[in-house]
Image 1 (cartoon, one colour):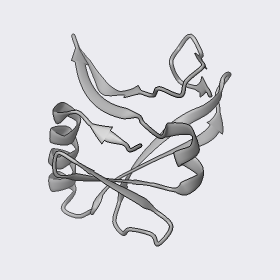
Image 2 (cartoon, rainbow, N blue to C red; image 1 turned 60 degrees about the vertical axis):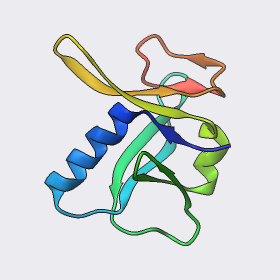
Image 3 (tube, rainbow, N blue to C red; image 1 turned 90 degrees about the vertical axis):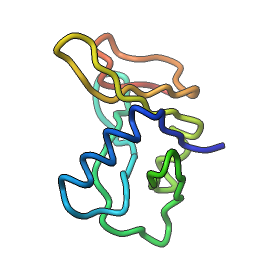
Image 4 (cartoon, rainbow, N blue to C red; image 1 turned 30 degrees about the vertical axis):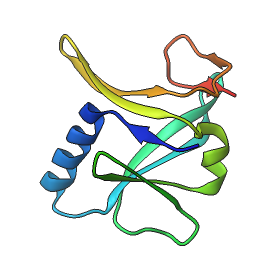
Length: 107
C-alpha cells in the first residue's frame, strides 16, 4: 500500500515548505502516546534517511520510517478547515479505536 495526500493537504504542505525555505517533504510517523496508545507525528524533513520509505502524492514527498509504516500503511492525509479551525485529518484504515479527543488511536 502507500501513504497518500489529498490535493488540499499537498497544497498546504507545499505552501509551508516554501515559507520555510527548505525541506524535501513531510515526515509522517507515530509515537506511543495518549489514552489509546499511538499518536501521529508530523515534521518537515530536510533529508531522506536511508531507511525511509518515500511516497509522492500531488508533487509532495512523504517520508515514513519502517516502524511507523506498520501502523499507518494505507493512510490518506487530508487538510481541512471547519469554521475557525484548520488542521490535518488522518484517514487510517488500520485504526480499531480512537480516544474521544482524537489525539490517539489503537490498531
